[in-house]
Amino acid sequence: MTIDERQVEFTPTHHALLFAWLARAVVRRAGEARGEAIVRRGVRRYGEQRGHRMALRAEAGGWPLDMNAYRAHGEWRAPEGSTAAEMVREAPDPVQHVLECPWHRTWDDQELMPYGRLYCLEIDHALARGFDPELWLGVNSIKSNGDDFCEFVYHGADLQSRIQPLEPAVMPWEYHLGHLYKTMGEVIVEELGEEGDDALREGLGEFAACYGQPAARVVEVNAEGDFDRLPEG
Image 1: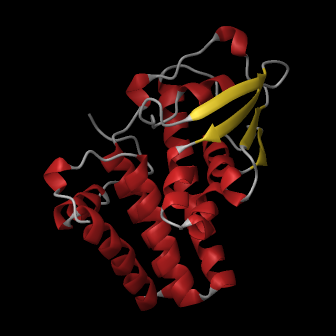
Image 2: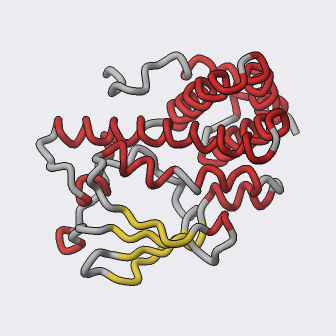
Image 3: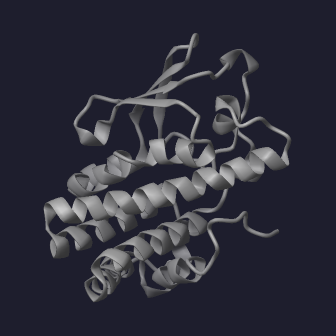
């Protein structure tokens, strides 16, 4: 069903669907093995850029680039009630289980899990690597890849400090959609050339068919930014 863009409040669902549609378009053209490798390379670049911005914010605020700073400088917030997670160990090295998230729910509902899982296979390690290559984030299980939950080990984090995520670091979903489209697109075109351009048009076309052409235009406009730097303002 087409949704008028004026009624769209962008959310993690839009991010999940745009990614999966782009990934599916790549796999259709490049085949499963090569296509999945291309998509995962795109996610690595995307995650490292996001992690780098997190580090820039932390450094600007005088934080050391440790796990506490990493946890405090995340760039997104999911809508209230859309995630379910629990800390199953607080020390040493806190362990978190994520039981539900909007990405997994969206891919499951739309039968896109074979493509969506490619995001989860790379994103968290890429974020930590972009923040600081010495940071040690354990990813022991991934729900979208068939496990019962996602398990993360935050090596070196201190939950005693009860650090709260910093709201100034949070970026709107339009920004994240633009970043995803631009960076995935760069890698896809590097790998597939004109076929990569076709894949991008197909993926964004799916987005437009669902949410309206003006909403797709929001993605394109936001993709014009420099995502290796902190946004101005």
